[in-house]
Every structure is written in structure tokens, then in C-alpha cells.
Amino acid sequence: MAQVLVRELDDEVVRRLKRRAEQHGRSLQAELRLILENAARVDMSEARRVAERIRRRLAGRNHSDSGAILANDRTR
Image 1 (spheres, one colour):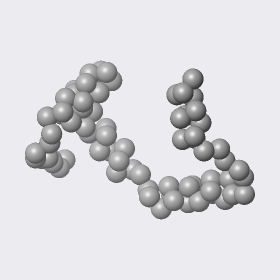
Image 2 (cartoon, rainbow, N blue to C red; image 1 turned 120 degrees about the vertical axis):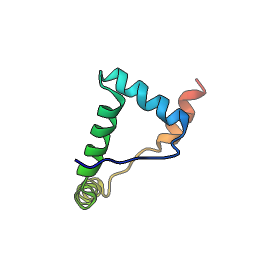
Image 3 (spheres, rainbow, N blue to C red; image 1 turned 30 degrees about the vertical axis):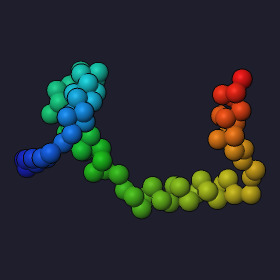
């Protein structure tokens, strides 16, 4: 199996990854391996096809401005 060394990671990034690993009951190495394996599986061309299908399905519909809704909600 291959090995990878990642240099100059921000300390805060490493802390968050360790916390994430702990929450999942895994070692940091196991958590990183899973993250990398999942990232390598992503097929961007398939993701683009799915996004395009969603865009076509939603085309022509009126959508509310979520920013306006949140701003209005915050003033209550």
C-alpha cells in the first residue's frame, strides 16, 4: 500500500480532524483514510449530471429569497 505525507497542515485543522475521529470512534489515521477514500470516489461528471437534472426539474419555478427570509426572521 502507498503512503502519503501531508506537510504544513494548520494546527486547528489537525485538532478538528482529531475531534472528528474521536467522535466516530476511530484513530486519526483511520479517519483520514476514510475521508480520502470517500473523496477519491466522487465522480465530478456524475455530480454535474445530477445537478443539471435538478436544475431542469426546478426550472421555471419561483423560489423565495432565503437571505431575505433569514434577515426577516432575525428581526423578530
